[in-house]
Length: 397
Image (tube, rainbow, N blue to C red):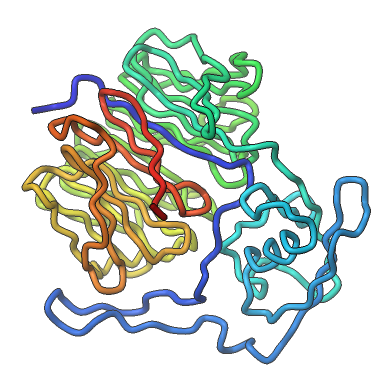
């Protein structure tokens, strides 16, 4: 059974993602049934060094001045802010000059120097955006379920909807052949991206908000200048098109899930093809880890796979639990868990061991396809969608 009109959703807390609680990344993996993943402590080289940062509010008043080891993360700074102010970490954005720092970023790697000043921006709450086959996208309050804004202007079903990095705008992709940028608060359409000759299946924004990448059924993916809607790069595919395309966290690469048997990786600036990640059937979804070192793919062959981006090596294969095709696959903000979706459920996996951790059944009717699922930025909740709507699930209960 195929879903009638795929529904997609994305979640944001208008604060940064939850950090890695252990500074660990997978460095090697043998085939299933062999030894477990080896792990490296990425902070080992700097564990004896410390740094003091100054966090100030928007009025320039000092909030806290923590001293931390260089292998600490931005999330650790947010914990210090939370202890001093009572503001939950997920409501905080920390800016270095104009750059929003990812919660998972290690202090040694994000450009911080001793005595650096960080600006604290506090969000008012959390929001969810959904895309639907009725041609609308909606912005919701995640705590009350109240619809805050309806984005109306597409002439066909809306396939994806995502927030901009600062949470102030929404980017949508539609089967009407366009992508659109909207004000999240007013619902006004800011810009329309026109140039595909087929349905646009996804639209995603770069981490700095400067560029947009679209995947379409016309056999191409395109990069656009967000401020002008000018197409700056076109990637031509060997097959009929792509279901999904996204930027790497540093915006240097584009990963596309194609209607063929593989996901394609390109250099975003030059258009050079760099890797292919191959399944036995077409790819439904592809995404990066928070640090950009790994990618995950979901396929109609009934599996999700974890890949090392630089080498193209497959590190792990996660089988579908119901002999159904896997619709989406995303890594948690800390990179330790994988979330996959299928008919009737979403499955949470341990990335290190490949073991199943939990099966989520967010919808009453188990025959409903769970079309997509994403982690909240904190990693403590999952937003899942189906033909029946969207549900927010708390992973701690």
